[in-house]
Every structure is written in C-alpha cells, then in structure tokens.
Image (cartoon, rainbow, N blue to C red):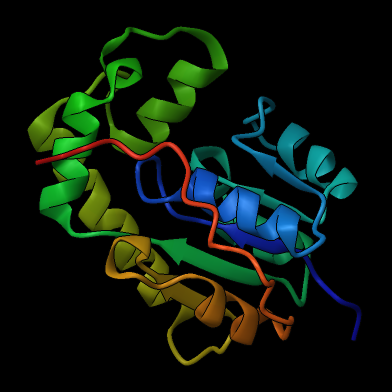
Length: 176
C-alpha cells in the first residue's frame, strides 16, 4: 500500500492553523485553507501537498479519501459553546464574502456570514457526518487542543517521533 496524505477535516476555529503548524513541524508539506476550493480543482491541487487543513478540506473529506487512498484524517474539535464564542468574536466571520471563499462558507456552514443558529447546526452535522463516515475505521483521529491534546496524540496516530518543542498553538481567540 502506498502512503497517503494527512487531512485536517475540522472546521474553522477548531485548531486548524495549529494543526497546520504541527504537521509542518513533522515534515509534511501542508497547505492551510487551500484557495482552490471547488472540485475537481482542489483534488488536483492537493496532489502537490502531503497534507491540508481547514474548511475546503473539511467540506470534501469523502472525495479526498476516494482520491488519495491510505490517507489519515484528523478532526480538530472543541466544545460547541467555546466554538460558538470564538466564531462570534472572530471578525472575518462577520464579513460578507463572495466568490469561492463565500461558496465554501455556504457549503460548510450554510451561510457566508456568522449566524448563531445556522452555524451551530453546521458544526453538529459536520461532526455527525465525519463520525458516520469513519465508523469502524482506524484512519481518523479526533483531537481537542483546548483540552491539552497535541503532540502525543498526533504523533502516535501518524507514527512519528514527538518533537522536542512546545506544541504550536496558533490564532487563539480569547473566548471568556
């Protein structure tokens, strides 16, 4: 079997940028939020990378699994309550977006701008889709950086040595 890629299939504000930096530290050529979000362009784009993270990847996790066999998937997550607070405070989520980025937001969340009810539903439904798709498989890691998880879990999952560095937490938003 050939070695597959690594896909971070968590949605924005769940630690996707931290995962990107961690994967880069582990030696993976990684793209965060690829700017070619539409199939088949994104599938072709990912040929040039060993790993990818954030919403476009999360939207197309099934297609990526089919295109890149033997890949591993990492669902970054956090509590719904703190995720909602983080989204509410994250200014970029309140801007109206057009083009591919706006389309990806609509595909991922159901709305191109933050809407508490719609986005809460999207968060829960995404998790259910992922859990259903990967049930009875061993190629999914679910990780919550807000609970202190990080190098140990990722490195065990990817069969890599734990770096002698602090875990790269990035883009934190205070939610209290």
